[in-house]
Length: 102
Image 1: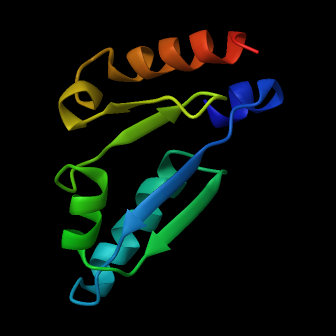
Image 2 (image 1 turned 120 degrees about the vertical axis):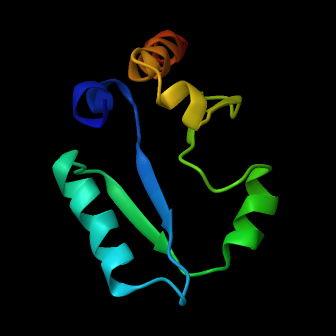
């Protein structure tokens, strides 16, 4: 979606939370995942504890997607939705709808 909609104003940032106690393999797995998905957008790796971010995000640290509109309104998609066959399509539908708003 980043490549497809960037010219219309979409900005995509990925965030991975990598705690000190995670292994080098875990960190390599994150990089492999991003490379496999051709993640050319900004990718951030945070080294704070997962508990801090779980509290800030109001959710456990399962895969989450946050979509923000131009006015700061947002919607969160969690692993349940993202794991569905049409999970990406649901996210993209909202992105397209919100990009139409000026």
